[in-house]
Image (cartoon, rainbow, N blue to C red):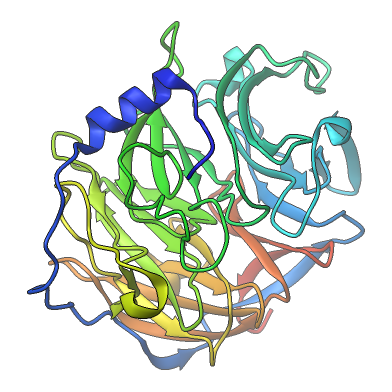
Length: 382
């Protein structure tokens, strides 16, 4: 059984998901998009080395010149040109493992004035912690949290999720994996009483933020991002043995949380219940099939990206860019007007051990690699 979660959070989850079971015997999968060609829309240029397993790179609101980086062992680093400064060192409070550590950061939309930011990490027991911090006037971050927003006990060392991001509705979103182990042995992803295997959201501007379930049926949503123009969330869910998937889901907040299918399905493949125990779709949420997939012939762990909104790479305009940690391959795809995706292109550029795709202050693409390097996208031929 899953280890106990905070009672108030569990109550919110149960209300959000309901308790109805689902009958998936007649479900017909919608075929996702797969690679359909190759492209050289951009090249990558290395801009920094010597970092310690970076898990995030991106910009903070109001900081036009800096890039912020998370190092998995527990440091928040700000880079500006050749200058590098540790803004916060939480390494004494962070448990480091293959999928544990300092995993996510989000800056409040009004960070330029209120200096509030949020971190997601594995505590010394390996449990998930999300807390609010405040940056000081000198650019460092006060090491004492302003308040803790979430504590979830983790039964295993893997599938912690890790992403934090503010959505177009102004809420803070967090992705949590299914708690680890192969094939979701505790069946948490479909469990209305567990926050594991879910995409959560809360309003951090209230005195007592409460988390709500937005999506469920996730295995390990390592990275997700929003397309505010269309009010959609793109979720990259790391697969089990065969399939990595990209999910494109409209944010219909007046509807029940949608179900992404794990662990009844991996991609569009039904899990063999005889081998892995009885399992079925739970809750009353609409089942959403992946928009795009690739198999383990092309990688082993998807790293979600962003819908490109910059100006320097016109061939990528409006396209979603993502990649794979193991192969370093990068792809881009186009969202279909009626839903789903099309025109999946394998890009010529490669980033080894890709952990994160972010943007700088000008919305240009930047990449983090577990090798300790950062890259930026530049026009092809540069």
